[in-house]
Image 1 (cartoon, protein in one colour):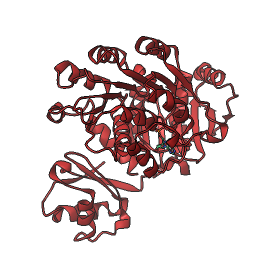
Image 2 (cartoon, rainbow, N blue to C red):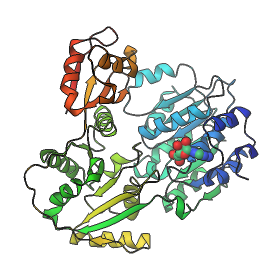
Image 3 (tube, protein in one colour):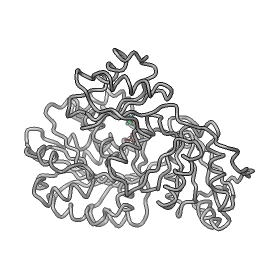
Image 4 (cartoon, rainbow, N blue to C red):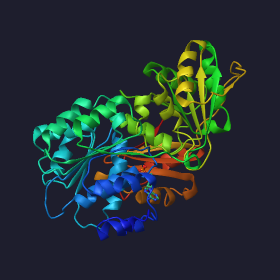
Length: 459
Ligand code: AMP
C-alpha cells in the first residue's frame, strides 16, 4: 500500500502529486507520512534524494488553513541554497491550493525587501535559523500561530553552530506545535535535540536497498605531502576532471589549491564559508554553467549545495571524521551514474583513513599513482565563459530577453549560449569560450530589451 491516495490528503495535494508524476511513495514517505498526518512528532533519518522534502511538504501543506492569514509552518534549513530548493519544491506541491503565501528568509540577503514582504503574514516560511531568529526578535515575524516546525538537515544545522538559534526560535513560537526533524546522520547530538524539542516522536529509519544506492567507486592514493598538488593536477587532467569538486580540510588550502590549479591552466574557483553571498553565488553560477570546471571547497561551503551529481570528487586531504567523508563522496555518483571519489592520503593521514575504513566496514581500495612533475601548462579550460549583465529581475529582465539580444542583432547561434541565471540585480549568461569576446562586444554595442546595461566578462 504505497499509493498516495491511501493517505488522508486534500484532493489539491493528491492532484499535485499526480502532476509531479509521483506514482508511489518512497520508503521515507511511506513510513513518515501516516504519523505526520496524524499529528505526531517524527524524527526521520533521510538523505537527499529520499523524497524527504515532499514528505514534510505534503504534511505541512495538509495542516495549513489558507483562510487564516497567519504564519502556520516554519521550515529551517542549514543553507540558503537548500532553503531555495525546499521553497521551490513546496511551491510545486502547493500549486493547486490557491493563495498560499510562502516566503523564503535567508541570511546574506538584504533585510529591507524581507521586511516589506512581511507586511502581511505568510502561511509558510522557509529559512535559515539566524535570519528567522532575527525576524522573530524584531517582531517582523510572528510565531504564535505556528502549527508545524520542520528542521531539515538537522545534523548540518548543528554542525554549522545553529543549535542556540534553533532553541531560541522554539522559545519564540507557539508552545504546541508539531516538530518534524529530518537528518542524514544520527549522531548523539541529534538524539539529544530530538529529546529536547520533540514529544514522543515516531522514529523513521530507512535502509536504502543496495540497488538504489548510488554507485560510487572509491580510491585512496598514498602520496607525500609535497606531491599532493602534482597528484591532484594529474588526476584532474583526466576526462572526469571536466567537472570536479575538490575538498580541502582548511580554508587557506582552498585558496592556495584553486590559485595553483588556475595557474596551471584549469578553470578552477575557490568556495569557502567566509565569502560574501554575492561572490558565492557567482562561483556557483560559474560552476553550474560550465565556465569553471574545478570547484575547490571546504566542507562547510559545500553543505547544502544544489549541484547535480559530479563525475569526480577529489579529497585533497582525508576528512577528519567518517561522516564528513561520506558527505564528500556522496557528491558523486547520483542519478544512476557511477561516480568516482579519490582521496589523497599522506602517511600522517593514515589513521584518519583507518577510521573511515572502520566506520564503513569495508576495506579501502588503495591504488598507486606515479606522480610526475608538470610538463608545461596543461590547458584544461572550461568550455564556457560567463558574462555578467548589471541588470536583473528588478529591471524585469528575463532569460528570454538575453537570449533574444544575443541571437537577434548580435547574430549568435542559440547552441553557443549556455545557462542563463537571472538574480534580482544581475544576470549571468554562459557563452561558448571561443565566442565570448564576440558576444561581449555585441551586447555592449546593442541593446537588451531596448536598454543599455553594463556587461562584463567574469574571470
Ligand atoms: P529530496 O529527497 O526531497 O531531495 O527529493 C529527491 C527527488 O525525488 C526530488 O526531485 C523529488 O521531486 C523526487 N520525489 C519525491 N517524492 C517522489 C516520489 N514519491 N516519486 C518519485 N519522485 C519523487
